[in-house]
Length: 336
Ligand SMILES: [Zn+2]
Image: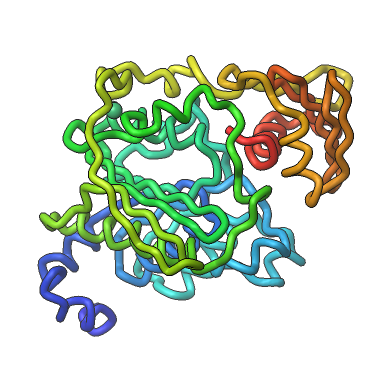
């Protein structure tokens, strides 16, 4: 065991003591795409005692460009990401307790999924679940590390509950915008998530060993331009989450889904959405599938699914009765 981690133990920030702390730690990684792949592989190799990896998706060919935990066999065998991650990483470090969980993380299950964890790592592609993580972090005093990437850019921030500003402190202006770009519509190049995932990993290691050098800023990168910047952040003047109002955990915000009986379709409501611009949405979606719209609805066809989106953000997802699938498609293509 000492030999496996010898190079890391030689680093003064970790040492024998730090290595023991890593081994006694438990982390939850929510979302296992590009960021989650980097975080999971790094923390398992570093010898974190327990790593739970949660993801709701299967692997597709367009994931392989940046999601380093997966390969073509996983796609051929239709292995969900969480399970593929678990299988690959168990071969890397059999001394780590690795658990892949295939689930859509939502207000009803998140408290159970993060129970007992020392730290939550964000590998997500949608804002809604991040607000949920933020709520659960503050409520149960579990630090979390936010990371997000789009195009050639990325951003990360560390949230120490009731100490540092929370995610909602800084993103009050994001709520209410309704439609946000997601990686599936804007594209992403792999170095952006590789670097952000690595920065999240180092924050994780520092938090777990009890280091003092926790990052207190927002770090932003643009790998194409070679730009790295950091910004000081303050608490939101009137942040509901910091006041103990956990709106996302109590499901006061966020998408709601209803299976439409007998229609093989699910309705997704998005209370946060304002007036949806079909023209803008169509521009984002056109490279990904078949789009048509009139003033009343926008129709979008991708793979075997068809989505009909209404101006108030409501959507009908056809060819499925699975609410998690519908919610996933909505987050992926329309935004949180
Ligand atoms: Zn706050």
